[in-house]
Amino acid sequence: MKKKKNQVSELPSECTTIIVGKEMTADGSMIVARSEDWDAMEAKNYELYEDTKEGPKEFIALDSPFRCELPNEALGYSALAPFNLPRHWGSAGFNTAGVGMSATESIFSSDEVLKHDPLVETGLAENAVFNVVLPYVHTAREGVERLGMLIEKHGIAEGFGIGFVDAQEIWYLETACGHRWLACRMPKEQYFVTGNQSRFRQYDPNDKGNYLASADLIEFAEKHGLHDPKKGEFDFHVSYARDVKLDTTYNYPRVWGLQQMFSPAIKNDVTKNTFPVYAKAEKPISITDLRTAFRFHYDNTEHDPYLHSNPKEPYRPVSIFRTTQTHILQVRPELPQAIGCVAYVAMGMADLGLFLPLYQGISSYPVEYTQGTDQSSADSAYWKFRKVMALGMVNYNKYAPMIKETYRKFEEETDQRQREMEEEYLRIYKTQPLRAKDLLQEFSDKVLTRALCIADKLQERLFTELTKDIQAEYLFHGA
Image (cartoon, rainbow, N blue to C red; front, side, top):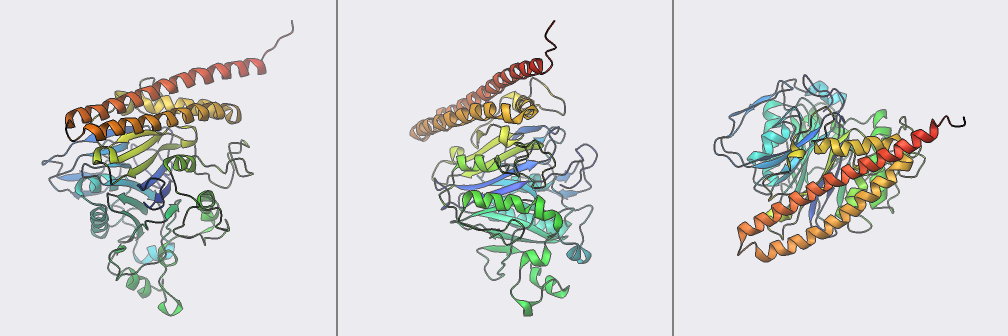
């Protein structure tokens, strides 16, 4: 979101999204992932809600004028909310129907199109999208249809991109202007990356299997001189999206860098927005690859801001300090939903963060993951991880390797423990469903609790090293 009101940070929320089709992943899963780059002081708390037949009748935003009616029945869902806005800004999670949603990627319409269909101050904003859609849909396509309906009915207060995934397919929706939108079904054999800019180009209104959109999307563009059919096929980006000088350093480099990482054979020009919308990776993409991607900061190049201690680096990296959380939503359709839907979440800056698995089938989190605020606290998971990052950034080149190696080992160990737990779950879940549920919960509690211990030990190690360094610098020895 570009600006927040009242209770939340005034810093802009600017994200990076990566989507991977099931024939492009290493294990045949489907993935929707995003970093939420906002304000380090906005602690994220994990939320879980149960199915209800008597849910709230209306959504009333606490930090914008938006409000809308809601269906009585609501599915349970998981969310990653700011500490001061429960049931708002849910950001990412799965509902009990197995639909995953990532909301939102801030994007921008061109000034010209907004003259004809402007943003609506009381319209649907990024603060509300997740919580007024995910509890009320049973498929990814339903998610697109409900969101599209809300956009057309209420208008939008700002531009955004939203990802949906279920056991069958992935959809991504981009807003076009005040009341218009386009959604595309993600190709199975490719991946998609975006950073704060509309990426879609092609649209075929007759292909309902792969495209959903406002009914007059092309006609509106023609009417207002945004598209001339005599000059070629309709291009959504050209007709509706902002593409200005700021994008050339803030947004282009992230797409360029990630496509270079996954597809080195593609020879993109970082200064030109000619990047393919979808691309094939050199090799299948794994969860480990995605962790690496969200930690990307033009590592070991002239544009690496952390290597060179350069906070004025013009190329915006994927991983920045003010990230509040990064999530990787994975769906493995061949598995029971409880373990087949997993959100890998890293609180704070991914480069110095730890990705932890959150299974759809769990019913609670350790309390530390639910109680962060805007003040550092020893009983908050968010702040335990954030302290490690803050200490690491004091001397990145010396301290970051310690953090990265510690977290790498823990992630690898957790990956193996997941495989072992899932094997046992599959062995017993049909004949001992309650035991299987307990097994999953026990595993989750143990991993999340151990992660806090790892962070605590890292804090002490870093503080010890920092003390030594300060003493060496200010020794005043020689009497």
